[in-house]
Amino acid sequence: MSLHEKISSMSMNEIVELCIDQEQQAIDLYVMARDQAKDESAVLKFQELVDMETAHKVALKKFELEHYMDLPPANLKITDYLMEPVLSENLSTQEILILAAKREDKTAKMYQDLADHFSMDKKLNTFFQMMADEELRHKHDLETEYEKEFLQEG
Amino acid sequence: MERERPQSFNTVPMKERLTIPRQDMPEQDADQRSANFLEVNLGLTPEQAVIEAQRCIECKKPTCMDGCPVSIKIPDFIQLICNEDFIGAAKKIKEDNSLPAICGRVCPQETQCEEVCVMGRRFEPVAIGRLERFVADYSLKHGNGSAEQTKLPAPSGNKVAIVGSGPAGLAVASDLIKEGHEVTVFEALHEFGGVLVYGIPEFRLPKLILRQEVATLEAMGVKFVKNFIVGRTMTIQELMSEEGFDAVFLGLGAGLPRFMNIPGENLNGVYSANEFLTRSNLMRGYEFPEWDTPLYRAKRAIIVGGGNTAMDAVRTAKRLGADEAAIVYRRSEEEMPARNEEIHHAKEEGVKFMNLVNPIEFIGDDEGNVIAAKCLRMELGEPDDSGRRRPVPMEGSEFTMEVDMVVIAVGNGSNPLIAQTTPEISTNKWGNIVADEDGRTSMEGVFAGGDIVSGGATVILAMGAGRKSAIAINEYLKSKVWSVA
Picture (tube, rainbow over the protein chains, first blue to last red):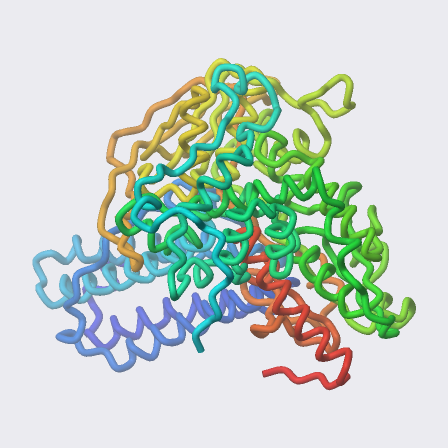
């Protein structure tokens, strides 16, 4: 069964649960990376990402559609052309940020695809559009941090 | 509390001072200098220095001092110049700044002391940096540094290790030797000066100036040890427990080059600015084969970045004989962090500026040599937190240009060696050492300051941090009480 078909047969609560599961997968990934990281600065950065994804998960649990109507920020595309690092115990903070931003981008694209697929279902379309925008917002925040620290151009 | 004004030696009536033009510093002709590594700026003449000093209107509240990170007594030294007491003026500066000949050359005065000079509100600000450089050079040439004038107190019996001989370390050394402590500076490289020697080219800061400043400190009793990597040759714990150092100052700088993480960055001919400039500045690659350091002489070089390091690299590439040396910068010239003077000099020397352009890939030939750069054009989008409009890629703007050398100058990070070998010292998520405002780290007796704490900044800010730490180290050595705020 495709994701589209699966979602068509689900209730709104089940769909939200599915999205919460997505966030949990991210949390699990970053916890694993944090525990493997050798460098203290990498441990701190991965912990920050764990905290960020946990906050998203908590927000989804309290989900109310009408609260999520903000427009997404501009896509800075800073990490779009960068090479995706392979997850390892020796990642630098720079690589961690690239990895996380690319992950948010992929998730945003997945939600956008679902929003487009359910364009005739107003409720589902709005929900997935909101989720796509939210992931783009996370990507924007990560890229802003990346730009501030790693594109000093000094 | 209002500051006591220095004795005035300025005989020019106040109204006339406003009509004196700011004195231009003589410099080498652009065509001539773009083919040599000799210093570009030649310094004010004594006559010019006095005229420039006479432009000072002796404000009741000298805002220039607030603009200086080490609070040099600017009005005082300017009055001494008016009195043609150039050695006295240099001594006055040295009360607050141990490296005036260096700061006079590389400090961004236009965003510090000169930016807040009251004259600058209606006219051009007093050329404080040029005056600082003039008296420091005069003192080096005609005086004997400041060693013979500094009466050192009796030995305190305390030993201080300074790790790194860059601006922060030298500032700490200068202040602590005057307190009677035994000071030893450990340097990983074979020359002293840190970023001043490996990062800044001869045409902007002649090495002789730096050697003279180091020699002055040596004459005052500071010991200098080179080729000594703290964390490898000996750890901090060993320095303290086996060598008996009572306190350690970490002034390691930010010497770890950052790359862009785009495809092709490991091709031959793609350098970090650190490597390229170190080969040229420290290893004298520009004098190959007299000096045994190979340095690629490109025909078409691009330098990615817009800061002073990028300007140093592009002007070096030009001097090495590049037919075309270009700055590739993702923002517009307005946002460039480089000093206006460096941008101006680079343009005069024929450097090309490709603004709002960002490389996304470097392409190599069969032998792994870079032959082209694939780039995107950028446009300015919404403003960021600081109000600067941010560059975003323009759809369909991709283009490729031939290059045979690329230098990446997008910034530096912290060397992780100390963090790896001294777990007692906390670092933040960027790898910088965590220290309080006086430089105290999480390990008793160990202080840190400069770029290793703040990330890449200016020479004078590093010196300011070093001076703050020196006060705290002195207090710690006297009390042996470790108090972290």
